Image 1 (tube, chains in turn blue, green):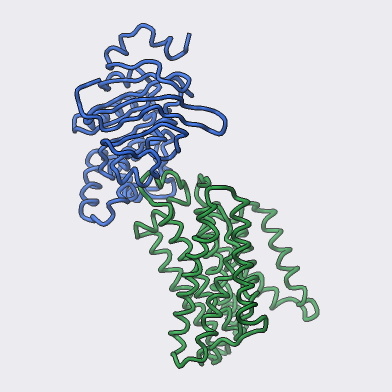
Image 2 (cartoon, chains in turn red, cyan; image 1 turned 60 degrees about the vertical axis):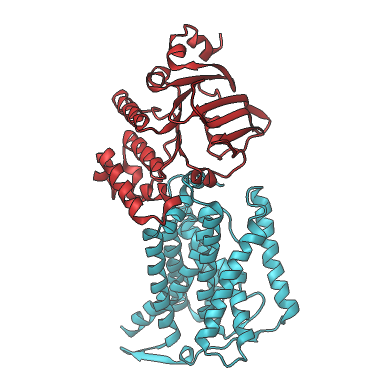
Length: 241
Length: 296
């Protein structure tokens, strides 16, 4: 573990879908300013873990702590107010709302701060010029890559201290994936703490400080990004040979 | 010529009331995917509030405002009593609790007031008629049209321009995602019920204004109308609810004008036949509503 104060601390997390235990005994930490990757094959329980941290899935047992405070059973809306923003896997833009309306919703928790929200919107438009061009267009008409940018921008509108990214590269063309990861690296340089779930291990390890590898609902390995990348049995960890 | 104008006024005034009824039902359905069967009782609540104030010396507009206010309170109470405790449990549970709350309110009115019709104060202008371009029409009809237009415009503005309105549209598409952006589920749902109550309250003024009295079962017909209008228009689309309301009024009024005298008693049968034809053509309703959707 790096020598930084833990912002997020997950201990012995267990998640169930009915009788199925999707995640068992998962513990992980994310330090302030760190970019931590959570890797693993499809169905390993990565997204479920992330959803539990965002408050969208109630854990069967275990604890989630944010800056030392217990936040295990808080609602999703409370987690946002605590500074946690989620970029979901399915790129859930609100398709019938315009790009500008989507961004406005991202700042829902700070809606009283009208000028601050406008400022942030202008900042997002500078960061993602294509969104400025499409501001009045319905979000459902954007391309996959543009929607991904919108979802990230929307999450940033809440001025999060911890950003949860769920498979930001999923289903995107390789050049777009490259741009998304450039953007993640920029956000990291700006000091934002992030937990990144990815199937694309090489891309994720390229930007991450540390990584956890999940298999069949458990943490199978963890270490610095370089160590995990160097581990010759990465494929074995993924596939469970 | 005059008969066409008369027809248009009748369709618009009936349609305005139907559209407001349908909107009040669909605003809750769109977000919760649950029909509030206690919706009609909000109209009853407003009616009895006005009856209870009827002997006082208050001006009518104050009594009307009190009725609308109580309907809004009734809407929010419906959320707290019938929906919130069981919302996340099962659809069946909410179905039963909303029926139960409806029955409870009706029986409270039966028990504490009377099963017999009770007179509701009406403003003088409701019984006046207006004559123009060869048409004689109750002033009430024109007021209904004006009220519907104003309310629909304010509602459209709110849904489009305010953060809360945008959040409600978002919650109707993808509730969990909206919550993950910090939109409070309870706030959105209570607001939806309050708006639902507002529409029911306004509608009650005109609905009860046609009859002049209130009975415990007064809410049944508006609930049925609202339900049919939303089914025609598309259960999940706000525009659809408005369209459905006006279309249903058009069918009703059209049949009323064109059916021979001895067939008029079968008006509902003709109306429902046309509704069935529309649904055969468009089973999901005329407007589809937001692309994705899920229950909370």
